[in-house]
Length: 390
Image 1 (cartoon, rainbow, N blue to C red):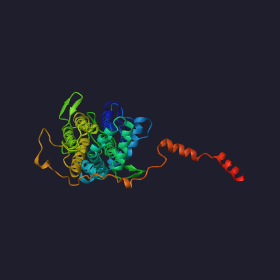
Image 2 (cartoon, one colour):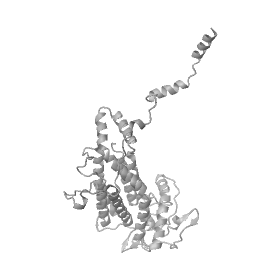
Image 3 (tube, rainbow, N blue to C red):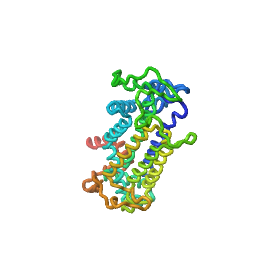
């Protein structure tokens, strides 16, 4: 679809990419607008929704990124249009789209949550391995990797799904900032030349006060235009959104739940992974609070519903985790709480059942043995034949 004009149009997508990169950086700790399709860039005098949306033809890096996200954008946009037609309310359609995505991602989320919880449960044994190989970092990493493999735990399983969910925000941003603002997004509902839904859009945009006032989809529900930021305080180019405050608070609570309960046997205040988790639990809420004022209200509604769904999932799997105490207060219902589907720790591998290691030894010995097999020992063969003739 049409790429946003240069300048502030890139702020939202770039911020979302930055957030995704922060998640990826946290995972790597010690242990157009993208998503839109593209075409000619809008004129600086026209708002982004004044040109019809259509699939992009990649010609430069940004349009290539938009082209890669276009199929995801189209899938989200088609589902949103269908739900909007069924409910006649764009807010309900956004909530339905969010719940559908979260239901599809349940297996991935459960794998992520279980893996993260098992990593916390194995922390004391990992710490002992690090103590044992304190003077040899390479051996410590190898022993730790082998230990995780024997216990059936993949350290990356608890992080990569989070990166996936963060990257989904990029095409979702375009769905609300462009799909809901545009007067003619019909081309994004055509798949391989087949028109899935006919929106009967207007033939030309109507522009007033720098906005398209006749978008093909009605972006207003409950008195809120979900295609634009919803601000209650604006100072210069900076604004605060009430939805951003709610998203930040819910994200803070959801992040605290993933931390181990204070005083638990598996809690090590010096564990670098725990430190990173605590830092991210503080960072992400502030991102939503201070940057949410530049994002469409629909995107923040998606984040809020998604976070509430995640909190319920975590409650069923890991309980309240490290949410309490808050300011020294722990409610009675959170004391000695047992999750509905608690995480169990895989038992250690029986040494007798452990697959035997190669008799060739280390990598150097394996390479030498493999090279030796390729050598034809002719001299030894001739000597044996002479010996037989004698």
